Each structure stands twice: as C-alpha cells, then as structure tokens.
Amino acid sequence: MGKIQINLLGSSFTIQAKEDEDYLKKLVEYYREITRTITSAGKNMDSLQVSIIAGITLVDELYKEKKRNASCEKSIKENTEDDLKAQEIALNLLDRLDEALISDE
Picture 1 (cartoon, rainbow, N blue to C red):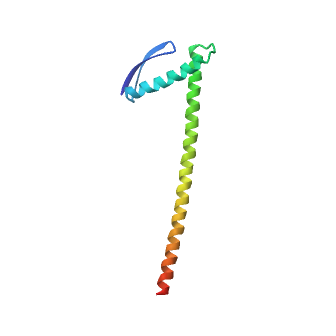
Picture 2 (cartoon, one colour; picture 1 turned 90 degrees about the vertical axis):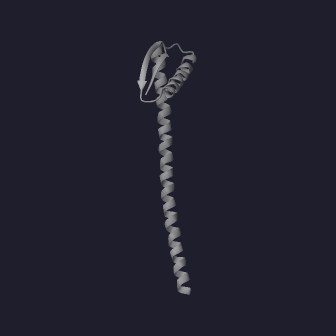
Picture 3 (tube, rainbow, N blue to C red; picture 1 turned 30 degrees about the vertical axis):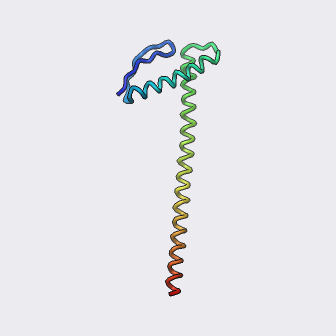
C-alpha cells in the first residue's frame, strides 16, 4: 500500500492507495506533465479549469486506448476463428489422404 504527498495546482494533500508508492509517484508526475502542458498553452485559466481539462485529456487517452484494445481483441478472436477453420480443413484433408492411401493398398 502506497502513501504520497501531492502538491499540485496550488493544492496539497496526502493520498493512500493499494498501489505502491513508486507507481503513485509516476501517476502524479504524468498528471503534472499534462497540467504543465495545459498551463503553458498560454490561456489564462484557474487551477480548476486546468484540472478539468487535464481530466478530459486523460479520459480521451483512456477511451482511445480502450477502443484500440477492443479492436485488437476482436482481431485476435477473428484470427482464432480463422485458425480453427483452417485446422478443421487441414484435418479433413489429412483424413481424405489417409482414406485414399488405405484404399490404394
């Protein structure tokens, strides 16, 4: 279980989570990078606005990643079904070859 102090966008607080401390630090640093990028865009926004835009940015990343993963899973499933069909065809061909060889003897 990890516990870390967060100082971000003018707020300071401590969080505790099931994940280890190093992982939590990586998450906070990633979020900090996003908020820096938004802040450096030059628009005059308060910390709440920056935080909301950062949240939307992260949700966008998550949504796109989920779509990509779903597409990959679908492709894998389709390939698996194709593999099973190919295997069935190959087994049928082997059976036919066996029958043909046996009848020639």
